[in-house]
Image: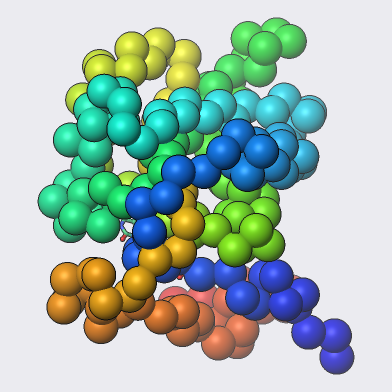
Length: 186
Ligand SMILES: Cc1cc2nc3c(=O)[nH]c(=O)nc-3n(C[C@H](O)[C@H](O)[C@H](O)COP(=O)(O)O)c2cc1C
């Protein structure tokens, strides 16, 4: 049987980042990879609002994160707000898959980051309501998640409790995830 590609197998979500600044040359391919994701009717509902470290916007973004995320995400080079457009641009009809499609784009970004040996860490632990306000996100868009992006750093720079969980996480066995012919999940 074929194995999943090593890029897929090796991707994980570290928290230790060095604080180094990424150049556009380094980070733009992440968004290019995201833009290559498939989507319903090729609607490409994903949007990425990027803030760069050492700017007021980045600090504002950081302040929206829950403490447990802020403590390590402060060493990111970029904090990114992932947003999706709720309606198709071509006819303004609601797209059932706007979040799903945007999830595919996020994973492309994460895999490209793994390929470039960058830390790519998704976060839902932040104040979505304030983020909508601070970044003036119109109602036709939905905030999906945030991403901390940076260069890998020393695991020992993390607080004790995070040091303990700085490793790739286990997955459910396939038997729990797939079934044939009839629905067979708990
Ligand atoms: C949508 C989403 C939200 C997440 N939110 C957080 C978060 O707020 N804080 C955090 O430390 N990790 C967060 N994570 C990372 C997950 O905990 C992580 O992906 C999961 O444990 C699997 O580990 P792996 O990515 O290392 O394989 C999030 C991941 C995703 C995809």
